[in-house]
Length: 206
Image (cartoon, rainbow, N blue to C red; front, side, top):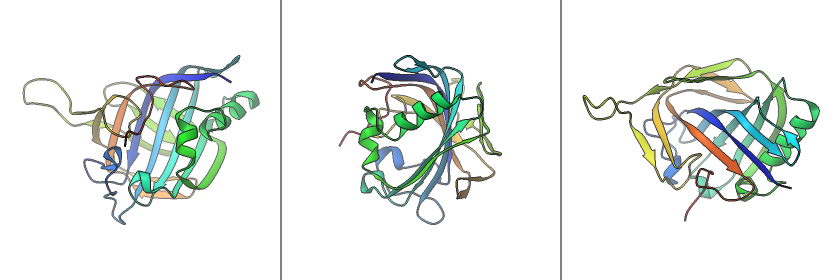
């Protein structure tokens, strides 16, 4: 079955600036692991004839080592406005059942935390905010060269939800699906995922 999703995401984790996970480096969280949350606004999307537009999706992770070492803990929270059909479709996509990059990632998951409904919110802008089950964080961008007005980005990372993403700080105590951490690092970008490879899909190049 064919699927696609596009929109904007914002993510937070426990690693120091900058999080090394996109380059397959060892995590720099206080316990040597990466605990994280990501909120994905699905601006447009579908699984065949199931419309996924207007749904927010939260990703919850614990990476105990560099990403390609596997043994991830990984779970999904789907916003409460999703119908049963939409909830099931997102669960199938994110578990890898419908192919695409998430099917490749499925082999790296050691403990699947499942899919559940919850409050998942997203607010766009220069400093986007995401929340999952009451845990909220705001992205604060790192500035680029002085006087340029630009912001710091990472481009063409080995692992990335987009070909280029803004990086910065987040803060606050986070808790979702049993994953708890104090937020430090953040990133955000527009994304496009699909069952067919695209330039904007999350990917790993080794």
